[in-house]
Structure formats: C-alpha cells, structure tokens
Length: 538
Image 1: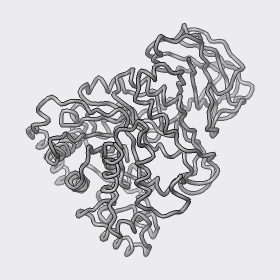
Image 2: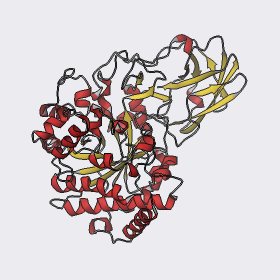
Image 3: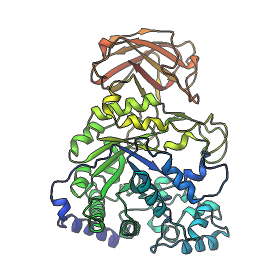
Image 4: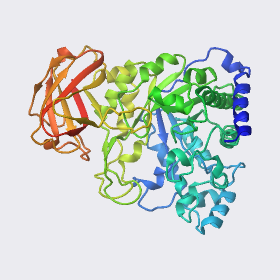
C-alpha cells in the first residue's frame, strides 16, 4: 500500500468515526429475537448428494428452494444465504453483471460457465428466489456475504475452470493482494487497508440491501480471516477501518428499511478474542456503530471451549450466538487426491446439545449452524459412510431449559488450527514423566451432576504399552477398561480404536461449575500425541 492509499484509508476511518449516529442507533434498541440461525453456503446444492440433487446434476432453481424447505418447521428462525463466494454476484447486479463476468472468464480461459453461471446468464436471481421462499416458509431471510473469501483464488491467472470464482476486479488488481504467493490464502486475499477494496465490497452490499427485502445482513469476516498487513498497520488503524465499514453498512440498512422495521446487522467473527485485533475487530465499537448480532465462529468446526463469556460481557446490548458445524476434527492425511479429500469426525447430537447448554450458561442468546449439510456425501471417496444431516437437533437447540436436562458430552479436539492461538490445545505431545494440563469449562445440568462420568483420551496413533495417570481438580482418577463410546454414535469416521484410547472414572463430587483442570501424565512409554479428549456426564 502506498502512502496515498494509506492516508485515504486512515482519513476515511477517522471521518466515519465522527459521523452522527442515525435515529435508530441513537435510541435504545432491542436485541435480535432469533434463537437458531442457519447458514446456507449455496455451493452445497451441487457439491453434495441429497434427496433433491443427484451426483453431477446441474443447478436448478428448485434445488435452492429445497434448501429452504428442508429446515422449515425444524426450529430454524433465521436463514442466512451465502450467494456464492462473495466475488461473483449470484443476484441481479449492476455493479458486476453476470454477462461481464462470464465473458471475461471465457476470454481468459476458453471455458464455458458452470451451471450456476448458466442460470445467471439465463436471467436467474438466487437472492430473489431465496427471499421469496423464506417468506413462504416462515424463515427470516438474511444474506451473509463473505468479506474476503480465499476459495479457488489460486486459480485466478490459470486456464482452469475454477478460475470462474475469481472476479475481473480481483484478476485486474494483483497489487491489491496482501502478498505475492497465490497458493497461500492469507496472501492471495485482498488488503482492506486499500479504500478501493472496501468500496468494491460495499458496492455489493449496497445493491443487495437496496434491491431485496432482507430481514438482515451478515458480514462474514471469517472468509477469509486475513485483511491487513500487520507489519504496516497499527491496531488503531485496523479497528478504525473495520468499525467505519460497519457503520457504513448500518446506515445503509437504516436508509433502506421498509415499513419502519429494523434490519438486523450481524457479523461472523472468531470465537477467540486473540484473533480480533489482527482482523481489526473491535466488537464494542462495532456494536456502538450499529452491529446487532455477533456470530462466534471457530471456522469449520464445532468447539465447546471458547471466549464466549468474555465476549458476552464486552457487548451486553448485542445478541451473541455460538456457531456449530458438522465437524469437530479433520484428519491429518487426505484419503485421496483432489479437493475435499480429508477424513473428518462428525459432531453428534449430544455434543451439539452440550455446546449449546454451555453457551447459554455463559450468556449466549442463541446458536447458529454452519456447513451443517456436509454430513451428506461430497468431495473425494473413502470418507464415508455419509448420512443425512441431523436436522432434528434444531428443535432443541433453541430450548435452553430442555438442554439443561440432557446428558452431557464434553470434548476437546484439534478443531480450528488457527494462526492466532498458539500452541493449540490439541494435539498435545506427551513425554514420559511430564504432566500436561487441560481446562474444561463445565456447566452443570438442572439439579447438578448426580452420577459419575468417564474421561477418555485418544492418541493420534496407538498408545502401545504406555502407562498413564489422570487427575481432575486435584483428585486422582481411577482407570477403567471401559473404552466404549459414551453414547450411540452413527458416525464411525475417526472414532478411537481400543489401542488408541485410555479412560478413567470421574466422580460427580469433584466437578464444579466453571473451569475444571485435568492433569494428564504419561508415566511410562514413548512420546505420543494426544489428539482428542472427552468427558461424558449424566
């Protein structure tokens, strides 16, 4: 970024910070009323095999409607559509018309458009269809726009079909990228310190809010979580830029609101506070600027242990949500070549219920689901068996009283291998004679814990003849030979084998509401890496 661009960026942020608040922001505002948010990435329509999509079938409008229909009446009250990756409009756009994009794509690569492109060139409008279907099915329609997505951008300059995901703006401005390496996501996305980058994204936001009757809009700051050159910006500069952008979107939503309704503004952000400063995310300032909803994400994973409680305290007037996904842990080694070939461990209903229970206990207003349909067959072979998604959990995830009466399945897993929190909780290398400590924030069920539980660990590889001890809150735990899954689990991928597991009985009397310390020691054996830990409690 040159000096002129930097001065424009910081001056714009300072100017925005001084704007007067709109009337709707100046008065006390009520919290968003939604309890269960459901994110729909739209690309799943053709990437997954489903009851309404066979393998290799092209996109049809009825398929988009089916994604709305299948969660109708399940407990989902707000449906968030991601119309593509945020670079190519899948709506009627004057900023970047479909005709312009696919003409340029054809000239660059020689390829014809995919089925999404053919639909758009034929006059299709995914956002219009989505909004109308949500209205018909009783779901609040939101659009979730990816602010800086990195998918497939490594193909932007290649004669490759996947180059269709890179816009003309992206291709023509390599100088706007964060770094020179097209293979690295944190470098090939765009630099938000450059005013033209933000203006281009805001132009998409503006026409979506002006032209469609949306109940809300989500800024997805997790796709991808890289916006600035950290060695060339300060925390204050990053926060000023991002807060000004939020304020700009808030004013747009207020200006385009219909019938006096508040249009809800949501941000999908990291659930770890350590990730906020590098991204320029100052949540209290953003809420003051008009943000209504904070959707706490761990990227593609369900994670129970987050900074939700601290974030809740920092933004008491906003609605806070914990995001949950289909996976809790991706395998180390792909099982084949190509895209989406890694094995993954599916989240179970009990793990969802426990995560939601803890979230409510720590102040959440609701939960959200992301990538939920990817229980279905997708990607490369060898990762099954696949199943239909457990849509039935939604009717319970919004009912905190019901959740507080359920058996609990707590866990720690590698989850999001993010660059902001190092070292990661898991996997953890264990050496003979060296104790390692793990923390689980636990929330008791209604009436407290009544029965003893069971703690398990799982190694990345067989644990061999190694010997172990475990303590919880300073109390020694008795080992048990019961290594079985604590609850029926219909998802076998990556479940522990007996040779990878160890287990201990956990007396209910040693547990407490809040942080619980687990001390794990390998007393004898070769170095190993623990990859998973769970605690089942009734």
